[in-house]
Image (cartoon, rainbow, N blue to C red; front, side, top):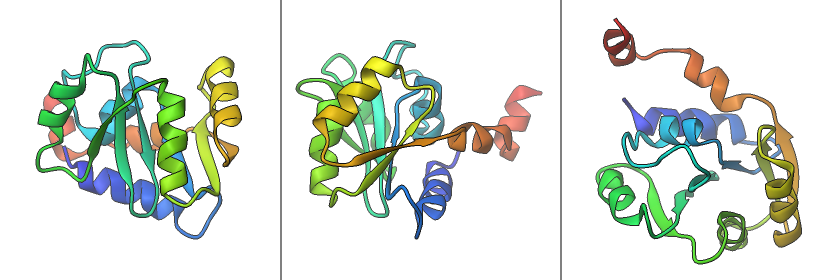
Amino acid sequence: MNAEARLAAVRARLAGAEPGALWVSAIANVIYLTGFDNVFDESANAACLITGDVARVYTDSRYLEAAEHAADGTPWTVVKAKDSLEAAACTGLAGAGGGTVGFETSLPYARFRALAAACGAEPVPVEAWIEEARAVKEPAEVERIA
């Protein structure tokens, strides 16, 4: 699993286009991008914020230690979300320069509203960016499936 290559692919898609940042909150997509296997469960307990130079994983205190351990040697920075994941993202976006933020169209409406209300960034729906990348398997993934 190559977290750096996956992150680079997302950044290439963000480069020079709208949105300028991507908020990934579907747990399967968070795990795919970060490579943090066996860290998170299936509840909404982690999300990623990606810009041209920011790669952050937000999680709550239950998963913080495991996520920090999994992040060793990767381009990901783990941040403890003190309030909601959306509030943490807004703080992260403000620090990354604001602008527009892409969000997965699978994001539940209540979480979208929280993200839109809390951020100074304009939310832009992004359809299946990560799912399309997940469809292409790396050699190690093919071997593991076989």
